[in-house]
Length: 130
Image 1 (cartoon, rainbow, N blue to C red):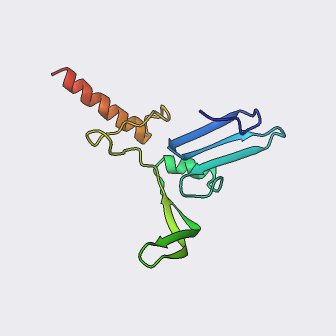
Image 2: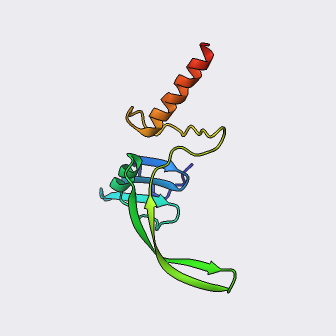
Image 3: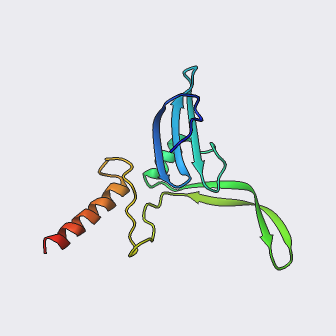
């Protein structure tokens, strides 16, 4: 569930790739297109909507996170570094019997989630028809 952070405006298009991994856009009250993005471990609203769509379609995007803090427990020091991270869509997570069926994001038959869901359905059909 989303809370109303858009002042009553309606989301036109959204891609939700996982927990704290999504992007959407909407028109504000003046008719300007506004893009929003959230990605865990990266600055809010700094990923474009086109980049979110590219990630969904399998593209890996490298970004640099400035000011990442690292704490050493052995010598009690804190180091601040820039870190390169790769943003990518991983719909297959290890949960039960090494299988995870992600929610259907789109009905495009070329997307990875639909392909994986189809594999699961075909596997279940083969078990039932034996």
